[in-house]
Image 1 (cartoon, rainbow, N blue to C red):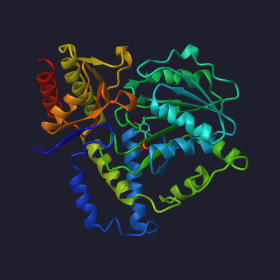
Image 2: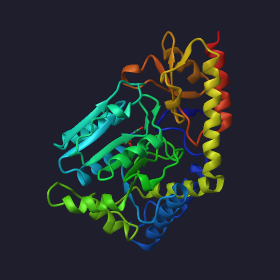
Image 3: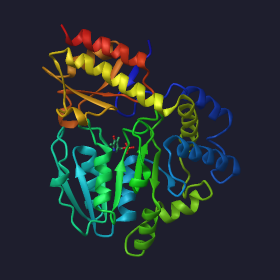
Image 4: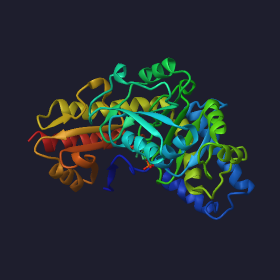
Length: 359
Ligand SMILES: *Cc1c(COP(=O)(O)O)cnc(C)c1O
């Protein structure tokens, strides 16, 4: 049996990727120029697929970057002159705050411990904050935010831009773009693709802000102005990850064909299969104590007596799960629940988890 990767990124490839890779080779996708019509048509198809799949409004721009980490940096560079505000509930949200600080901004934060949830009334967002940053699914802690609570922030601070990292929750997360200004994800998680491509979606207000501050801050080749000039022609300022853009378009087609409603429903069923094992096991516990905020796409479990031997025993069955993040490495397992994982994959994992933890 081949290995199944339940690791939270990179992860299991979407099942159709092999066949799309063969087609990419046949079409010379990795050799054609990124300035020629064949490339433009391919990129246009990918952008149209993303718009349809994720219901991205026509007046929001779609840009290609190289990673989620790059997106954090570009968003700060392009929208913040002095002050950003960050909701920090783990390592990825903290990385964003640190990026802003490293760019010499006032990076104000409201921080809670790993596994804890925000009390929005405790966030003291300064009047001068230009951008509010949130991480929809904190992959290091397994906390998934409630979108209505995020939208309520926008309603309370209509003059500020709101940016949401959905790296490990897209395409499961069902976003109302009209209530957000910036959304981004990289493709090696929920889209089941090779790493090295990030999709950044920005509102008209975000572009206007970028334009407005461009003479006061440093913005380089991935300034939103430059990205927009090129994206109007379905191009990028640099030579992009052409293969990944091609594969993303193909996987969007596959997901449109299957239907996101079904993908979301399967995600919840797969989650429930693991949840049931947890409720029947004395050795496993959800790390996030508040059930309303337990991630559906990154399941984090604390393992009594440590996670090392469980991770090894599952690997012996070709079931590759993630260790805990950083300081939780040896106490937790992390299970990615992405569209590439079939219900049958999860049935197998649930069965083995049950066998290994009920003894
Ligand atoms: C993985 C991850 C990132 C980093 O993305 P890269 O593409 O590896 O730079 C950012 N945010 C979250 C929530 C992630 O899970």
